[in-house]
Image (tube, rainbow over all chains, first blue to last red; front, side, top):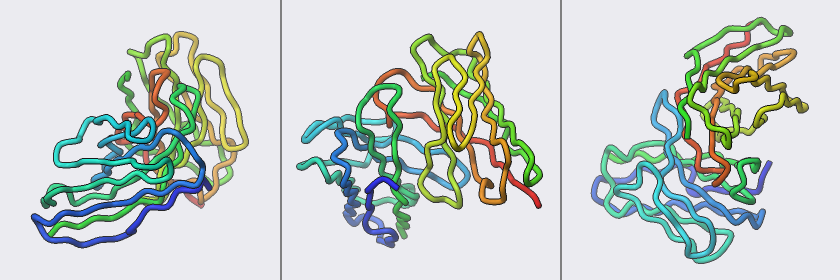
Length: 114
Length: 111
């Protein structure tokens, strides 16, 4: 398995509180991604990074921010959590942006906002 | 990225081949076809990908039609552990992880 660690694996938080999820990789891959998955549905891209301090928005970026201060870590922050952000969050990495380059996924973080 | 259409669910007998179809009629010339699967809400697992030629690896085979408007993922000898949601993704030749996942096909392998 690719060296991807997501933390925490489970979290329950209250509406309005800030939350930060961490993705740590040991593969030295340049590209990192955050997805969310809601019950019964596929994954949707939130934000991605193409290098240290280089990030861009995905299709569902509202309410989320990211930071990447070093290659191995990609942080996802919910500035003020809402119940609609209850979801499973997956981090992914890839070595390059080539179409032939596969992405590897972490095991996910289950976030519940009450 | 082109949109894909997959059946919501399929069954397969253990030991038999599982053939999972995917339609991607709006695919462009520079778009790859990727397959991932997700077991028990774990992180998606890469299976195989191709551009226009058929591909085979230790997990599966990918058959892409000549017009590239559809493809089939073949698991040659399905086992109970192959029960999962299978996602067909069509992606432009940039940003490997910037993929659009649909709802996939839930494959149930039965004894």
